[in-house]
Amino acid sequence: MQNAFILDIDEQNIQQVLQQSSSLPVLFYFWSDRSPQCQELTITLDKIANEYQGKFILAKLNCDEQPMLAGQFGLRAIPTVYLFQNGQPVDGFQGPQPEDAIKTLLNKVLPNEDELALTAAQQLVDEQKYAEALPLLKQSWQALTDHLDKPRSDIAFLLAKAQIELKQLDEAKATLATIPLQDQDSTYQGLHAEIELLAQAANSPEIQQLQAALDSDPNNIELMVQLASQFMQVGRHEEALALLFAPLSKDLNAGDGQAKKALLDMLAALGTTNQVAATYRRKLYTLLY
Image 1 (cartoon, rainbow, N blue to C red):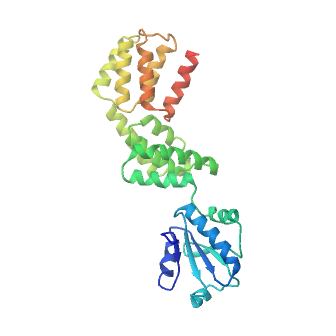
Image 2: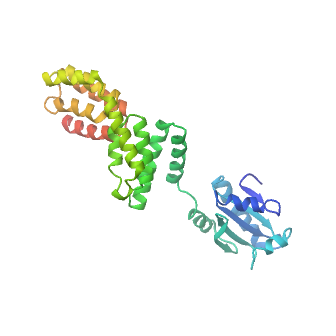
Image 3: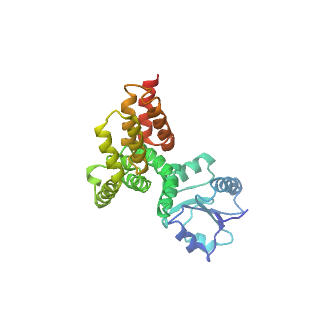
């Protein structure tokens, strides 16, 4: 059965398919009805193509019907399979091959799940859908950095941008702190400048008034909760959590439980994937147990 990723090749479409290999790997399959080996290989290749659902193109060239076209590839045997990427053959084989061997060949050039997540995240960032992009960016940043055993600054820049747009300024600072010196370019400087501008804007007159009042009455739990709530609204999450954790480290029932309730509410609002929240959850856990 033919579909968008399983094609029969002729002189009319071969150039177009070769051009497609710049964005998708193309598996060129040269076959003939006269070759008994092709029967089994055709079934295997069709099965893999349908399983991978468009991650590569299976391009079939019937050598009996297109002998001149097949001759341009300098075939020495049938069946033959060439793997094309960016318009050039990068691998291949002759004769029948087991399914696992063909998948191994394909997986060398196909993007893995983390790279696909990064591609999806990049699209979401381009569409300014930062909340949707954030978990995908965290996933790909962690996984691809671990895989390469070195920082992926390009992903870190995207992650910091999403965090800044979502007013997660402490998290954005932490992300940028992982950027190695050699990658601290104009993009890095620009993101730092955005954080500084937002931090200045986040220091509202109301926050300043609450801070002054708390300085005059440093044990006032009600003022702490009010100031922490203001910090949360402008993305100063770590300051908010630290402010409420301080009295709890001395008395878990500080303010008749008001501080603990406010802290738990803020941790819940930040979610389970927030790094700053995870740190304060662990700190609170050590106090509770």
